[in-house]
Each structure stands twice: as C-alpha cells, then as structure tokens.
Image 1 (cartoon, rainbow, N blue to C red):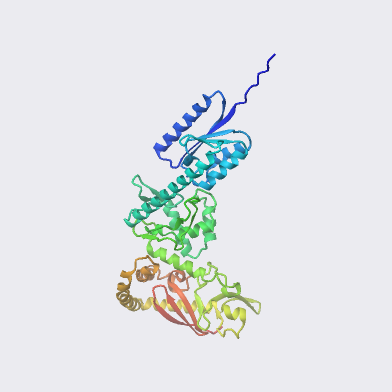
Image 2: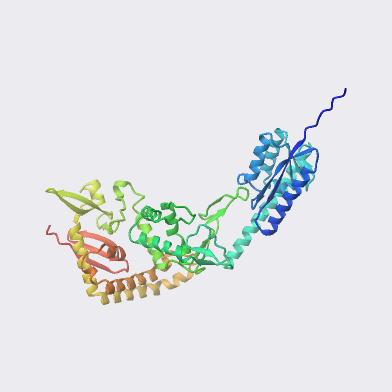
Length: 474
C-alpha cells in the first residue's frame, strides 16, 4: 500500500505601491491589486495571503509605509512564505533598506520575487543583482527629488507659488487654487490678534477659545498656547507668504527641518486677501518682543510679565535700565500698590538708587500728560508728522536697495498709523480720557522712563515724547 504525501501550499502575498494619489495612479494600483489577486489564486500550489497596497506613499523609507510594515510583520509571524511585487523600485528605493529587508525575510525563509527584473531572492545571484539595481533605483529617486526641488524654486522665482492651506485657520482654496478667506474663521483670527494686543497672554486666549467651543485649525476642541503663538506670527494673515520655512535635507528620510539659513527663502507680498492689517501685525510682533525680553533673564531680574497690568514691562529705570515691578506694601495695616526698580528690589539700594513710585501718583501723572496731549494735539501731531516725513526722505534710498522683507521696512507707515489712531482716540474718547484708563495706556504708550521721584518721561507709540510731573504729597 503506497503513501501519498500532500505537498504544503506556498502562502503568497503581493505588495503594490504608487507614490501619488493622482487619478491615473489610482487606476494603476486598482489594476495591480486585481491582477495579483487573480494571479496568486489561479496557481494551485499557492495559497492567497493577501495584497498589501499603498497609495500616495514614497518608496524611499519604510518608516512611513503602514501596509509594507504590516506585510513584513506577517512574514515575521510566519503567515507568508513568498512576496510578489512589480519591481525593485516599487518595493524599496533605498538600497540599504532594500537589502536589509531582503536579508531579514531570507532569514525567516521568505523570498521576494520582482516581476519586472525577473529576480527571485531565493536565487544565490539574486541579492547581488538586486544591490546593483537597487542602487540605480535610489539614484533615480535622488535625481527626481532634485528635479522636483528645482521646479519648485523656479516657480518661486517666477512668482508662482503654492501655499498649503491644511490646518490653516481662516482660509481655503477656490477651484483655481487661490487662497480665499472663510469669514467665520477670519473672525476667530481677528479675535486672537485683538485679545493679544489688549494684554492677554497666549494661554488665556487659548483657554477662552476652548471655553467658547471653538475648534482649532486641526479640528480639535482644546486650544494650546503654542497654536496661538503660531497664528500670531504667521505672515499669511497680512496677505504675504514666506516660502521654504522648512526644507528636506535628506531625500531618503524626507524629514523636514526648519530652514535656518541652509536654503534661500522667498518672500511674496500681496499674494492673497489679508485678514489682518499690516499695522496690527507689526504691533503684535513688537508686543511679542516686549514680552519675550523679560523671559530670558533670571527670575529675580526679569519680573514676570503680567499682561493684566497695562503698564507691565513698560516702566523703565533711567539709572540702570531695568524694568519696574508692581509690588504691594503694607503701611500701618493699609495695603498700598507701588512700582519699584527690579534691580533695587532684588539687589538693594547699593545696586540702584531709583525711587519707588506710588501707583496712585503714577496714574495721576499719566492722566495729566494725556490731558496736555489732548489740549495741544494739533501742535504735537504736526511736529511728529514733519519728523516722520524727514525720516522717510532719509530712509527711502536705503529701503530700495533691500531685497529681503523686514519688519523695519514698515516702521514709518506704522508710526503714521499710530498717529492716525491717536487722533481717532482723541476725537471719539474725550470723556473716557479725563482720568487714567488702562485700555488707552495699552494702545498709546510705548514706554515710561522714571527720571526721578518727581519726574517721568512718557514715549508714545506714535513717537511723541512728553515729560510728566509726579505729585509726592503721599
């Protein structure tokens, strides 16, 4: 009586990949999946182990290829004996990784068959030839990457740009690929800029948006301070676009890094409709610098920037240059608020002899300066306009030589705008300006210099500088 040994079927899977999601490539991968499914199932000696397909995935790195990694895992788990794929370039464009995975699979007894090259890794000559062909595939990928990069830069130079609008609050794209404003989202952007200039910190703004159930650019319910900071620093909200903020240094890993000078950047102005005016944008950048300037110091020297106080970070000592801090004193059981030089406060009178100013006296001095400004506003504004006109005449030839966008290029227009705002405030808020007002201090005052216990100097954002007297009766 003869014994018939039943031959075990070979478990065969297929791997398909296209690098873009274009319609023609979508059709291509669908055809590949259908072809390999039928091809494997028609062979009586094979058992179908699935088709692993990936759309819009680059072949230079296995890290970001979920289906490829799932297939490799199944091979390691003993579920696949053989893989069929169209070509070496479909399997892997990175030569080192290609050989690594072939050897890894070979150790588990899994072979890979490349149809186009008619190569099987179980063949002893296969690995040598695959190394050569894999190197060619890698070089093709490098050349393609360079050509793509050259094409993008060439379009930049021609003024043809493509701005990514994914996770970009306030904009979408029309059928022509142009950025267009989404009115509802634009209101959120305006709110963020306005609240920041009103003195709120990024955390407080983020908490407010979360509390109001407003979704983030990524569609999440919780806002973070980092998201607010990114929005506040995004030049696209004034209609401009800085290109090549990030770059790809290695075409194999495709990892993007911040461009800190490795590659040239391009700045395109008036590319699309703005949501924020340039003047507001500049104010925000200056305010960010003001707040940041207090953060890099030791805590005892910096004074925490508390944005709820309109004068925080604005009052400076004329003797040592340090910032004045808001403090609470208790005198005869009475709580009194004063402003003190941070240097003297932490290091004693030997470090600085600057006087302590009572907040009540400071407010009165500011109030008197505001009233003087209102009374003689035509004179002050005319003098400032004449000064700015002279400045512009001197700086225009220099500005024309500049090729790179810089916030300083808008400084003249910014001061003109501040003067205009000052006029509007004086006209519409005469009643409110009869006494100290936090809001208008934020809007109008750039810096206060403490000259002595009886004198301060107030520099307005428009450039106007006035001295004020402190009443020291207290």
